[in-house]
Image (cartoon, helix red, strand yellow):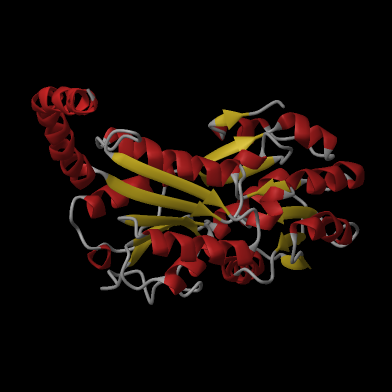
Amino acid sequence: MKNASLRTPFSAIALALPLALPLALGMLAAAPSFAADTKSVAVTAIVEHPALDAVRDGVKAELKSAGYEEGKNLKFTYQSAQGNVGTAAQIARKYVGDAPDVIVAIATPSAQAVVASTKTIPVVYSAITDPVAARLVKNWEPTGTNVTGVSDLSPLEKHVALIKQVVPGAKRIGVIYSPGEANSVAIVAALKKAATDAGMTVVEAAAARTVDVPTAAQSLVGKADVIYTPTDNNVVSAFEGIVKVAQQAKLPVVAADTATVERGAVAALGLNYSDIGRQTGKIVVRILKGEKPGTIASQTSTNFELVVNPGAAKLQGVTLSDALLKTAKVVSTK
């Protein structure tokens, strides 16, 4: 009886094997094909705010348009450093260890961390004002390295002209920026030249950390006729603190980031960061399809838009001219 009871399970297994084996072999055969077709893109940003979030979303949208869809043939990873340079370095090292097909690095500190961490994995930077000053690339030509990307270089001469339209009598431009961010330093230098050419001067207010931004804004009261905010991530992240000072002091704010207009800037002439993301995504797609990043020159965008906020202007002591309102592509009344 013992022998009979032992034979019964083995008999059942023997009968089941012919049915189960083809299914198992089919699953094994399908797995390598799926893995071979799947591409991995790892995205990191120094901080989360509307402009940088729009870049990330633009990259993802462009990938989908090109046929790369998360959950099907794309592994899409995103991490924010939450404004911490040390965290940016940790994320960079993790991504290099994961060995994705492409790393997209949004904003200067994140891009610098990733570029310092790998010389082999393709790196596409985005929303970098001056990639040469940030030492990501040697020049604007194809680098022959693993790095390329898209710049959000600001038209400083046009920004100074906009300032004069918003505050016709302005002579002193107060600028808040992060002294530790290479791009911000480069912007201030370019702003000084543009201001001098327009017969104006620049008053600097450094803010090394996000928490320092409101204090920097307060330091400009009585020293500047207008506040200019560049595409500086610390500054943009703490923008509401600037607006509070501006309203109390009747000190108009003109910005380079159009997303800040709904947050209280009087006016901004800047790039559409969703477009920057789509432009960045196109480069990522080219690399996923086999192009080498070193053969792709760094790019800029020329799709600028003017955004104005008459309600913010009133709170900050100025009235926007009809001529300016008519030339604005978007008017925010928030």
